[in-house]
Length: 256
Image (cartoon, rainbow, N blue to C red; front, side, top):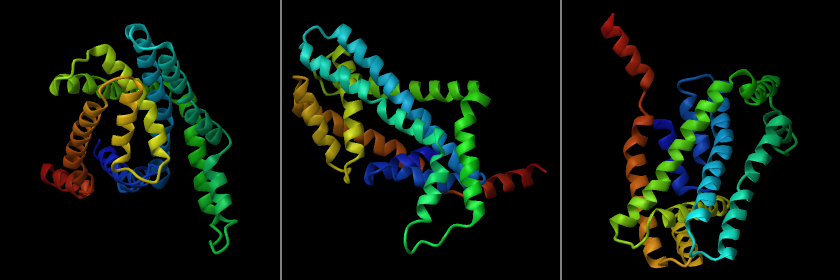
C-alpha cells in the first residue's frame, strides 16, 4: 500500500505513468528484480481490466438511472467506456508476444546504447513468463487482485456522491454514477498528455458541461477530491522510503 501511494503521488505530478518505475524501484528493496518488475506489471495488467470493468458497470447503471440525459450524451459515455478496454487488449497482446524480451532487443538496436548482457534477456524472458502464466498457474490470486482493485475503484465512485453532498450540490446517486463513468474514461486522455497539474481540472470542467451539470461546481468538486488524494498519499508516501528490512531485522533481534 505504501509503495502504491508513492507511485500514485509521482503520477499526480509527472505524466506517462512515471510512478510505475518508482514502484518497481521501491519493491526491488524488498524482492528480487524479477519479482519486483513482474509484480508491478501484473498489477497494472489486471488494473487495465478492473478499471474499465467498474467504469462500464457504472455507465450501464447511469443509463438505467438517468432519465433526463439525452440519448446522444449517454451513447457517447457508453461508447467511451467500451473503448476503455482497448489498453487492456493492447497490453494483453504485448504480454502474449513477450514485451519485456522485445523491449530489451529494441534497446540493443539504439545507437550509443551498450548491448545488454545475456542475463538481461533471460531476466526479461522470465518476467514475460511470470506475467503470461499468472492466470493459468494462480487463478485464485488473479481473481483476488481483480476484486481488490474493483472494490478500491468504487471508493472514487462514492467519493463523488459524498462530494456532492459536502458542497451542497442538488445531485443524487444517479448523477454521481454518470459523472464517475464519464470522468473515469476522460482520465485516459489525461494519461497521454505531457502535463498533470491543471489538466484534470480542465477535463472536469468540460465533462460536467458535456453532461449538462454545473461545470463550475464540477471543478470545485474535482479540486476537493484531488486535495483528498494528495493528503492521503502524501501521508503514506514517506513511509515507503523507510528501510523496512532494517526495521524487521531489529524487531526480530529484540524478539530473540
